[in-house]
Length: 428
Image (cartoon, rainbow, N blue to C red; front, top):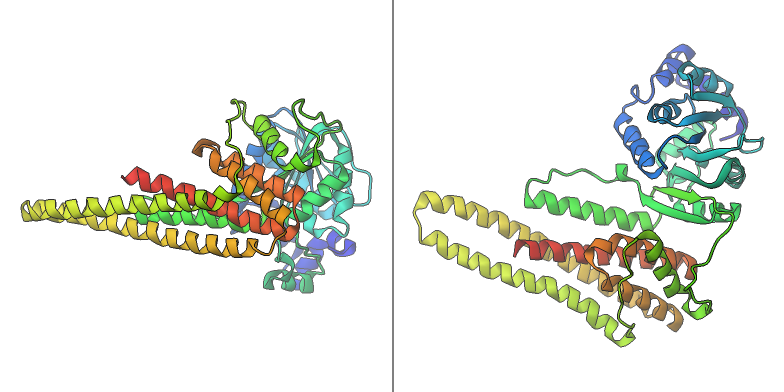
């Protein structure tokens, strides 16, 4: 956002929309409850709170507008300082001020940012900065060692949406794409020792799940969100300030083994349980192992078919009233089977496409990808999320952007296969 328009944002919007400044300020003062997206806003902040260290802690809230996010954090027990470049916004925010909650006019992009904070949050404001790296660098300096930065920002394609174009034209704002891949580079360049990515749960449609159809539809939404997030959809980033990195004592230094070493180190750090003994990677067995997972779903479907045949025989052998009830159950189960098979066919198709894409990669890239996937298929279902997270971090560090996007798709498909296996065997 241009600095002049950012500073005078309230007056600019009121002028363009032809309503009184007092009315607009009243709307901002009652935010988030005055906004039709209130549910999404509160859900975002609830997710952010789950990623923060527990209070008491000193929290720096950056780009606060009218201060509603700061007020929620203070109500949780954090000692909060909210920053915004607009004096009008800070005037509004000060209406919420109390012990443990204060606000300050600050150009956190170019000016001096107060220091000594345990946590910093940027909610939907980094993409307005002229120089987003300066913002991240200043926040890094404001955090204590071990401090956490959490951002919630729009992803790839945000700047070219119809709404963004209209906002830029009307209000003079800057609307940038701010995908996790860009934030990761900014945060690492600023000095953050670790950067992680989380799904933004407000982006997942909620489905009524009392029926088999609804449950499978919700699973499909979850898989779709995981895949789209890996390819640039809006997400939540969490960075930690670590000034001294201590290499795990058993980590090997050979460059050729860095990918697999990182996976094991991450598993040890993320999960206190003993590491699982993984089988040696066999490139020739890779395709057979993945095909076997898909074949297991087909075997599950065959067993279900046999059960339906037995159910039909039972329906035919009892009186009509009871038969209607049992037949209704059989119909519902058949519909569930249909969805499982449809998902299976979709996964098979995507798997074949990815295998075709892999043929154009270099031999080194293929070996690293298959080795990482071999580890992924070797862990149990309880650890599947940590494994996917570790796998995606490996790819981000070791491979190209194009290869990262492909790997994210494979990770999502692997998760889909695991879910379908769990669903199929549960029914059996």
